[in-house]
Structure formats: C-alpha cells, structure tokens
Length: 183
Image 1 (cartoon, rainbow, N blue to C red):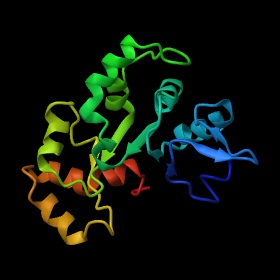
Image 2 (cartoon, rainbow, N blue to C red; image 1 turned 90 degrees about the horizontal axis):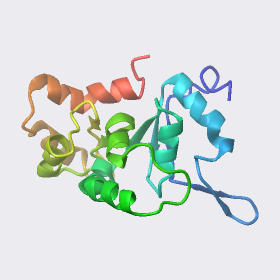
Image 3 (cartoon, rainbow, N blue to C red; image 1 turned 180 degrees about the vertical axis):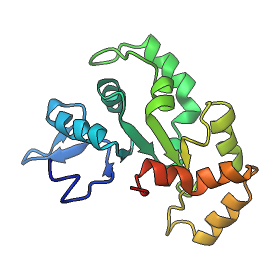
C-alpha cells in the first residue's frame, strides 16, 4: 500500500459492509487483523471511507482506529432514527465479540459523516440536526443520480432553511474538506 498516496493518488475508499472471497466465498469483515494495514493507511492519509453499515463491525473499526472517517449515505441509511434504541438494546443484550467501549451514538458523532444521497426530506435533515445532534459539519449534500435528477437536488438544497455560510458548507464545503479535494 505504500504506492497509494503517490502513484495511485488514493483520496478515499468505498466499501461494502463486508467482503466475500476465496473458493468457499467466505465472509471477510474489516475489523479482522488482515485489514489493519488498510485502516492505518486511511488514518495516515487522512481520507474518509464510505461504507454501507453491517453488524457491529463499524464499532470495532472506530474503536481500534479513533481517527477513521466513515461516510454513510442516504442520511445515515435509516440508522440515526434508531440510535437511542440501538444503544439501549446493546446495553441489554450479550453482543458477540469484545464489548463496546462507547455507544453507537458516540461513534456516530465522532467518526461518521452522512450524505443526503437523494434523501431530500427537510424534516428528516432537521431531525438529524436537532434530535441527534449532528451539525452541518457532519452532513454532505449529494444527489444519488440517476435515481433523482440534478434539478430536484438543486431545488431542494437551495430551499433549505439554512444561512449562507452554512448552506455553502452543506453544498460543497464539507465535501471539499472531507474528500481532500482542495489538496
């Protein structure tokens, strides 16, 4: 992986919640030691990873790699609406593997970023800001083309009840910063 920053210009990664490989199509989770070098490189290069969530793998990754940045689409893939319930259920249940050191909500606030990904529900966006405690430095505007049009996205984002600088941050500022597009 040493060639990532120079030869390949590694700026970010897109991962499914797990991989399947080998002749037996076995499941490989990103918290396994074989991926440690990948996560170390992600942190060293200070680049985000876009991941569709699955199981408690993301918790282990965030715990082992405190500065990792994970991007979740579609305003959090419906998970933020259930953060409190998830935290409470995990406290009550016996989770396989090492116990969680922090709540899912805590990791959501420190390691995760959300994109709108065509989810243009202003009330839901405001819920994420007011109830979950995310602010606009954690939410990135995105379209999810071809499922929604550029025009639909532009109309929605331009109509948000947000001030000039905050609107610029959600439209492009965070994406530029998070994805390292200004480097």
